Amino acid sequence: MKYVLVLFFSSLSFSLAAQKKTVQKKFIAPKTNVLKQTAPKPNPDLIKINDSVAALIPQKIDGKFGYINQNGKVIIKHEYSNVGFFTEDCNLLHSHNDKVRKYGTDKYASVRLNGLDFRINEAGKRVYLFKAEDLGKCPSEFKAQLFHGYILNDAYGIIEDSKFENPGDYRQFTIYPQYNYLHIMEGDDLKNPMIVAVQNNRFGVIDIHNKVIIPFEYSDIKRNYSWKLARLFEVTKDGKNYYYIDADNKRY
Image (tube, rainbow, N blue to C red):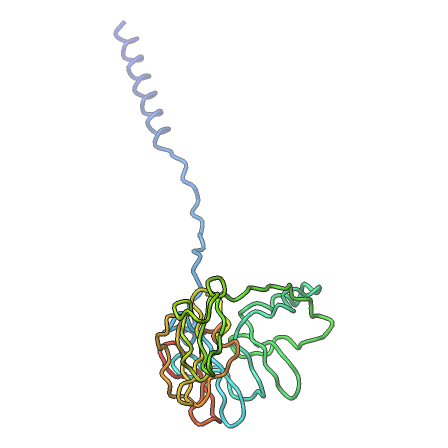
């Protein structure tokens, strides 16, 4: 009996040791190299100081156009006879040629060199030459202005169409006629447009509340799409050399 018990405990001890060894053998998955997704670093030359203004701004020197950043650094050299802002081109966006539609996005700008029109990227590389057969048809998008200029006694004011009925009641004018000239700039905010104004033969900019945004110190402010496209005004003090300013009257 004693011999049998010794065999039993020996067998049990061996079995437990075997189980212990079996438990200790765990499956270890092989290590795999996981590639971390890192966001591309922003181009320091395109970092905005004023977020509402375009990162690249057209500039004209000695009759040639190029682009500067918001710090005034030349990013794209002055070699073009005409340039536009980095904005969408709806003709390319709606092209039947799907390979060129990407050039219609706001990552590209239209420029003219030696009579030819190109799209360039933000590095200044000419990536697409305009071809008539690539141009699609832009959809018509008309937004009626809420405000309009009104002339009374040779002076310009502003009226809101939906509220104006009687010019004899000065309270119905949004801005009572008092300027030599007024022009409502094209923009996305129809309720708060920027207005080019002329007072004493000097140009400035006012808002719909008759608050002066840009002081009356310029000989001309172009009535173009620069405000709509880039939140900039194209101005000159000598009538020849034009440049851009933002709503804080900062020059670029």
